[in-house]
Amino acid sequence: MNIDHVAVLREARRVNDPDILNALYVACSNGADQITIHLREDRRHIQDIDVKNIMMHSTLPVNLECSINKDILNIVANTAPHRATLVPEKREEVTTEGGLDVFGSEDEVRYAIELLHDSIIPVSLFVDPSIEAMDKSRELGAEMVELHTGTFANLFAMLHSSLPHSNHSVKEFELPRYELSDRLEASLEAIKISAKHADSIGLEVAAGHGLNFHNVHEMMKIKEIVELNIGQSIIARSVFSGLADAVKEMKRLTTR
Ligand code: PXP
Image 1: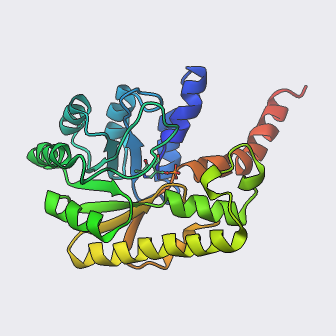
Image 2 (image 1 turned 90 degrees about the vertical axis):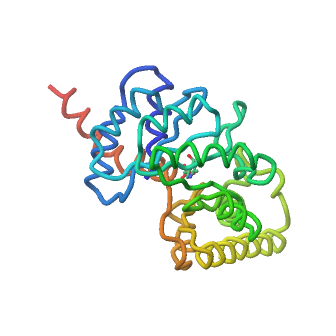
């Protein structure tokens, strides 16, 4: 479970509420298998102190996502998480858009992997699904790849949810339904083929980004995928499934 989104809410008010350590505790005690956090260069959600506290208190392995920026890499190397996942990062993006450019940034990615390996930290690369990216990730020395499911998730949501009728409709996917359907199938096929190929060349396979209560079943059918990193949809659901209790409790506290 990715718990960054709890820190997003906290940072919106710059208070310690919701407390990320509460989220850590709830995730650890309700079935999560791993905690994922992303220490972004601009520290927009997870802060350095969160990394320290989460490492200290997590009863589950911690997957620390980071860019290939050298300052960040040094922090990760000194933190010694269970695994590091290298992701691309742009200041202006709302969330991680697209996978790591393992071709264009080959030297930097290789350097990052070596630096993390020197600290005995296994490395996963967050990449767009393609056979070439799997081969390159293996060649660069990664142990694992995380397949970026953003395109799949966007297409799925444009076809099967109210997203096209909202402000956040994905412009590039404002297409006739039959075309969306073909593209969705193609995006799923790319994930399946990449997962199979990655597994066959000895990479562990994870997937993540935009996975939710409606689309995750498609990932569960791909047996080579052994890990899913999911954040936003769980926190979004908790606003509703947890809100009833919060409202009742506040009513109780404010009733004479
Ligand atoms: N995996 C990676 C590498 C990510 O950057 C993110 C986004 O924080 C996720 C998984 C989780 O995506 P989401 O929050 O959409 O579930």
